[in-house]
Image 1: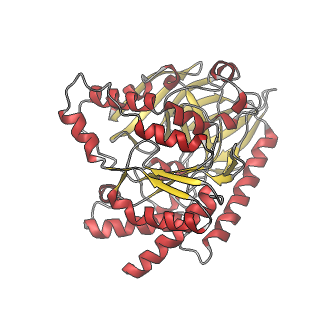
Image 2: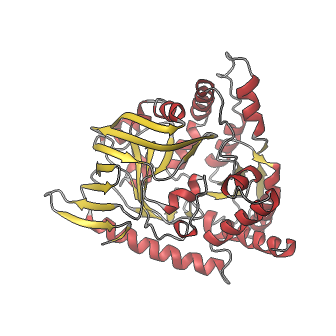
Image 3: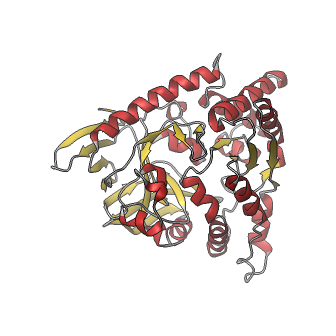
Length: 418
């Protein structure tokens, strides 16, 4: 792709982010960061600037960017004094919260090095991550209640591109990753905005079918997986678009192929095997299994990154339980690309998945109005974390179980059966 062609695609991508993802309203402000509480690397500046232009084009009155350098995180883990990891500056969180409390929009850009913190002391990495999550918990609470219109998108980071396409030169790998991003977010189509609306309508129809069933539980069966997951009364199946409390309809993830809800935090039993690696906090976790009893994770094993996985689960009590269940057909456009992205934003849209930790309040009827204790009593999970991991495959069967025990096929061989 020539430089001019790439720039044209980047402009269309930014327009879709602003008009479909965030749906920025005239008079709103917009703040841009890397995954909510870390600065955006300078290599993403071309996309950020196009987003700013598109936002001003629809009437945004101010666009702010938190810039940063992800390598500083690794340097800290390597060289900072061991007794210093309870330090975390709150100015970034304060800036984001000021915008959120004003009803403004939040854009997070994903694209960090999946191996950024690989090979480092998991004890140190765990302390850093827990402190960051604790400091940013107010932002997480606002996002999970859809206080404002927010969106997560991706940019083709250099290190990430080399991870996805290791046989290509750095320049060609980055170009190929940009091509993949444009394809999976429908930017390569003649009218991306219209293509997105068609996709959103189809996703909404699927969510409505599941909502009408009101299953009491789901049963998963595949190689290495035999798992039953309860669904609480009042659960809501969500897809693509949501209505924020500030009155804006937005699309939280680009790309998105999932239909999701919250599980009952007290009803998860059995074993699930991950079918994709999980990139968590700069560490790659591969070939892992998670065992549940009465909703709680009782054991985890992994061939690589097991210490990081255990640290994730031990973050807090809520990290021992689940906060999201999402259904994605094995034939999703992202799965059909035939390669891993090593990035949850993409890999979760190639496979059915679960999330360790916090549940989104809006996936429970009336959940936004409940305090933590009331939400937990209704079956929702409260945690600092929300980490998706993939369990779907073309060999997975899922049954919906009604309150009377009757079963109905939801998926067969990884595809919709409803």
